[in-house]
Length: 260
Image 1: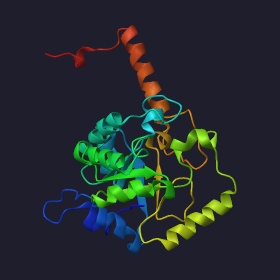
Image 2: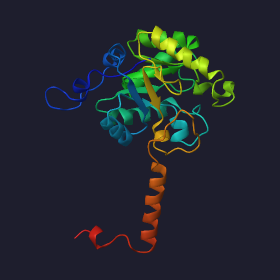
Image 3: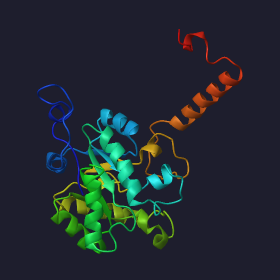
Image 4: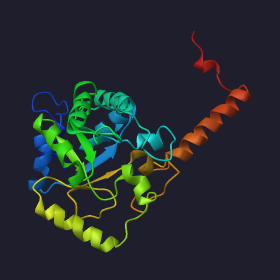
């Protein structure tokens, strides 16, 4: 897998003018040798990408999880290439520094290596992301090889693969968790590229979570590995409720909100 930055002063500020310096794939990969843990979050639009980028995240993942947290579906299988290109382009437009990685959605790479290459190329050319993510290990090797041969960086995804939801019987915690955490640590020690975990323990080189989960914006699933850093869902409901009340009681808009 990929991962993050050089020393903070070099990564966060451009030497000449103080503008955030974009993260590159080589810098992302080099973070492992520097012993720098990488922080990744999901994003699906320009506004959130700008906020997370300014917060200092190393990478933004445009996940096919948008099928659930944005579209309201029960899984990610219905997300199309056109939808991924659209959302990834919004995120790439909003990110100044973070590395932007886009998921290859279900059935965008499974048919043939040439299909995989064509769709990965769309994400690079049309959405202007820096890398793509492909689910599956050995079964996706030929697709990944074709993409890499075209100089498109690829992040792999093994373990609980959401596109395999029907085969797995749902989003289930994998059995023998201690064994899986041990495997994650062994893989991290064995490979020269960074590993990013989600529910795979602290032994990986970095972590990724769904932004809607850590902000309290998505209530349909409550994974044990998620830490809620804010309860923005409640805050938004409260603000919207107050707005509705003020409009209905004719307390908004007031004189101070009128053009003069």
